[in-house]
Image 1: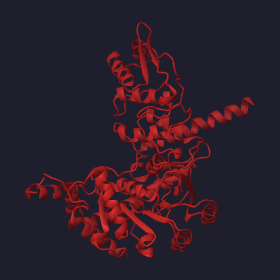
Image 2 (image 1 turned 90 degrees about the vertical axis):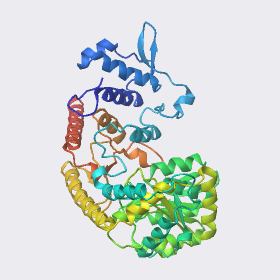
Image 3 (image 1 turned 45 degrees about the horizontal axis):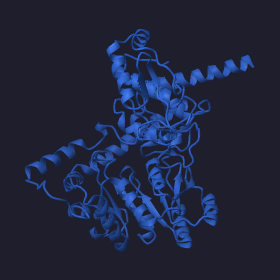
Length: 477
């Protein structure tokens, strides 16, 4: 049924839970299927009955198994309502449930290898600077009561405005609204600009959390195909001839998942199209600090006339520092601040002060340079390993966190990801990132988490097994 690997640091209970979740999620274990008894499972896999009891109990608590008196444990049958997306449970889709899988990325911290995640390892972040900032806050008698300011901590807003001026984005602190990460910034912008039923453009492939958030708003998602050099502009212009989008949410620089970057002529053309067709460009530039090139952005070229600019400190300081920001025209920013107050009052003054102390630390710029160099080396090394296994790279990036790749023998990366999870490996299956999810061989690799030999051993074995199956089928045919 599944293979347990005692040599892995992942606890056996977690391996059993994740393995069975994967089998249920892909319907290899169908509704009403009976699982082996606790003693039979323990004997078959060489583990204690207490380990199996705890694993089965967790799956019952998660709504995946049901215990029937004097009969044993069975895969729970789901109603249509449950299949439509109850939180924390796999849907009835026999292949893959993107929402369920994405939730597991954040819940399953016990997976030892995370080449599919969207953050950096602890030792790649500026932990020393953050600890110094924490000590400074604790020693300085910072008021930890009350609320923050509606627009956020003024000193940090001033620091953001100053850093943006270095990128040729001319703003003052009054045009900066601090948010709880870039996710809240994108949500505020979407709720201000869009109404249910309206069309909105997004990168395809693109950012899954953004797509889920937009779908909850009831808007119509229109995918703009990404290319290794940015956008498929003829496809975009064809879409504009049919739809009347209100906005285009996009990552021009070091885009996730492809790590592609749009060229200057493409950015200029995109601004021209936004003016001609009257839609707003929402530029998500959260990877800017990972880019050593002082390249232009939509915001620097358009100076916020047709552009709302979003970024964050979570990628380079720490994912736990939920401090992002949005920059926009004054009248639009005022509306966004009101929405922020309505939905969650103020953001945290403490975390904003912590972020301010970190980015004004004298070693911050040195950290960013070291991070860029380290990512560049990882990009080159992981690309070589993928090429050696026969993967096709969408784009050979020299900066940023990701590589987008596929192998001719991997037809469905979601199925591969399910098997990987049973071995303690979190992959980034391509279906997560598509506007219209479908089986695909594409995978997103986070290069900072892709240097462990266990990943390459798993990929090599999986490709070899698939090739053997195909050869066997050809012989039998």
